[in-house]
Length: 186
Image (cartoon, rainbow, N blue to C red; front, side):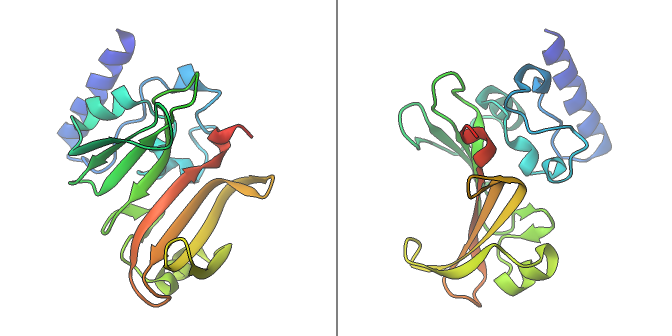
């Protein structure tokens, strides 16, 4: 009940201030400290998009309503919610014990993360984020990809990985897939 009151108050405050683009913090962060990434003062997790990592499905639906497209993804129990107006898919874990937790995000054109917008070229993104971990032809995508690692690095992976994809090295990016590797049991 207390969570619901805090959440409703936060939504009313955001509506009053006219700041619809930055959602409130998830109402149950304290309840998932084993999953939620770090101190609220930590850098990249304060991003308007990256802060969704660790949210549960009920909180996303309460905030944005029913998705435009809902479908299974990532094995048994995994699900994706796509919101056309936001140009974002929230991808939820299907793993036992943490069902319904946002562990990946897929962003589409005109969606911003960490100051870059899907639709920018790799060169434009590099001007903002610096050199990527990789920038190469990707046979899986049948185009080019560029990968950034954020946060802690362990076992040859970053805490959060951002994978930008484009048809060619100089073309506008078409999507960015954000993978919360920390969630994956490291």
